[in-house]
Image (cartoon, rainbow, N blue to C red; front, side):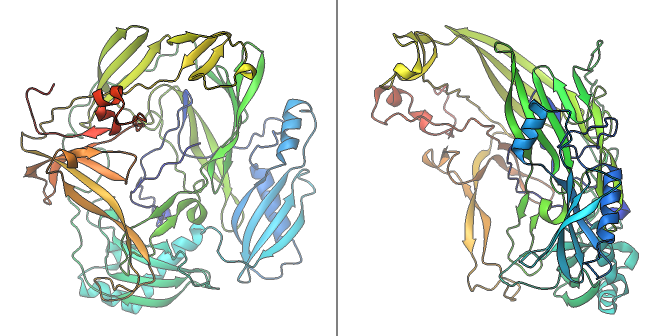
Length: 599
């Protein structure tokens, strides 16, 4: 699929039982003419012959639990289930089954990771015949690392602080009641020491105050160290007291936010499909236009896309594009080496599970009325199936949440190319420029009729007999004369730079095992040379701010320039004449003082 690195808030997923919803990651959308939102899918029970990649059904999950609990070689109790998923057959077997011998039943096995007696156990369970499910392989993982947290352990560990006298004293000193505070589990990560115990940090937030956004109100300075398996507090630290952030202005929920979010709502767009949906779902197989693929579910990875194939109409055959794709990990390291933060380097999939963390999608809010949705199943710590409803949806057009965009469009035909130039204005205040290219290629004639004949560089691609499409670039350049909240504007580069914390004490005075982090270098462009940016260089936020206008907390009012994939620069030599005429193509961003003669 794709990898996106977002320097954002992490998602420890604590207090899940309280159902205080907070989305810390904006939805990530992969477009293949249809969209998929979030993670998970229901096992197809309607067909007597499931697809070999179908996720385990509730019946299969229940049978797996019984087989593991009855396995005599694991005497320790209780057994805590941390992962149960399909042990996918070998790829050649799957391809053979789907291409030639779909009537045969491939063996179905489950892979199980469980904890018992302080050890991590791995089971392979044969579920081909649900009336005779059995453990076919068992091993003990004796290497470093631990399986995913279970929701039950996270909730229980977060509750330990409530009966802990030092914690109660800390709250009393701050004038807080137990009912004002909720605590959750934060992974310890690994900092060079292999700990036999499953330890985690527990940190707390203020849940009172009329806002659902408790992440905005941390109880900073207080940390508990908890043995998650034994559910005991092994260390406590109240390092310093900090003022609790106010609740005002932190509530993100509809009807709670201030202007412009609670103002008049523009007329929504309408999806009209009088002939019904343009896609068809058969069990876990999705067919749409010339695409066919399988949608699976995994409690760790979430949505799994497999066997994605496109139909070649000329050859009348299906051509596979993607055999299997999923989000393997979301790594979220924070850049604070302080005692309460240095360990905030989360692995959201491996520690918390993307599938387990998926939330039900809301009709006509997360997806449009013409969407189809699927449920998903995973297991709780006791191994019992848990149903998550409406956590994958499939739909055509629109976005993952209602939005109205005003588009100003012009189409320009220059020679053989048509350029569609769009300006998109959104209600959130953003402006987006979009360029679409169509028309015909400018082609070169050649004597070649097959690529095997080519011995030299032909400066292009042989796209048909005697026809070469010549390599070329399209550098689309925009001129923006910005007046952000007035004319006193500055260009800011917030460049991400690494820091190495070897032997340096943090400002708290307490050394921590964190050895590196990154921070932001704030630079105001003072010259035209400083206003040149190669987006492919060091990661940076590019901001246009009005230094005379401040937000409530003192930040400069501004806009961010967000490049959307157009990161190429010219590869021509600087002394080449075409390049000398278009020297600006060596950088993607050029910021200059206003000059009326420069147009």
